[in-house]
Length: 252
Image: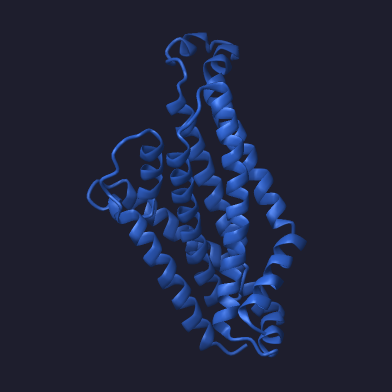
């Protein structure tokens, strides 16, 4: 069984478990709602009893608010999907014995790991594409047209951000037979990265810098730091290699 066969099997699994559908619905919903919430925020506060005084303090919504809302929502829920989809990718199959059955075909263990990452990457890509289309349409309708090339680059950085934590979670899933241990380890990395990302000197070397870069690109602000992108790419590579090495040494 080669990589392509394993990849098709994983895509069927994504469809059968409705992960693809769930990802599309969730991210598209926030892609659509983000500019809408930015536009209606003053009205929402004004509608709350006693909130009129706060509504007057909120400046008129701009396209920057819509973009910031989009980036914030998509990155948060995109990473959540990455963790949830990957936490049992290997651990559950080891626990149920299906990994041993599949590998007896035979299938190289590297193909087993890589096929899972590629299938999850495709799921996140399709869902993010749908969210980006919805966000672009509603932002254009409610505010103004966004520049297309920076918008595509912004979503590319968001996708890389999501894939970084998908790879890390896949690594932890390879180490254990319990998916909750996998998501716990990945959540720990996410929290640590968020803490380091808030520090001026270290933040530019973390995946969190991708979120800042994504916002700067679409708002036509100069991006002088690309360390976050390179660190994320290296982290994905190391996570996949470490997953393969650890999985290769395990008795199933």
